[in-house]
Length: 195
Image (tube, rainbow, N blue to C red; front, side, top):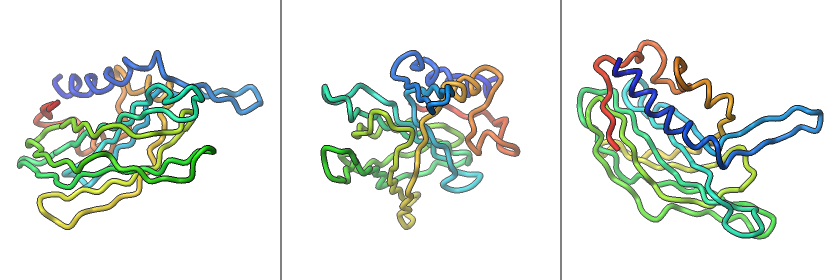
């Protein structure tokens, strides 16, 4: 039962924002796609042990032109191990491209360090970046060091979640992250939530 509550908490947090900040895209043939305001990607950093979920919450346009918007970046670290894990040098950057300015790489203000409790999902707020207001994916660079090891640098393409996808993750569904697959799920013992 607790596993379901852990999942539902995350899904409801995403569903709560669905009513605003979405986008409708049309292919010109009458087919439309309804996007939520969230960009989301989950992947293993260390398979079966440490997973990362990166979420970008699409905010309001930065200017009256409405070309660029603010994206609030949050990382969720899922530690399936029975021991704590130290993350150091956690840094995110993105390259902004639009018709008004040349391509510019922007990094979030500072490297982040944190300790992940055993058997936990930990929320790590990272800050805000500039994103294209009508985008369907965001290219990010992520650097992280686990437990004093050599830093890992990852190039990520974080897709914008459609409203039907988001709805499918609700009651009775599961997000598409690899830790929600057999043999990792259901979580025994349950994961604690650290916000």
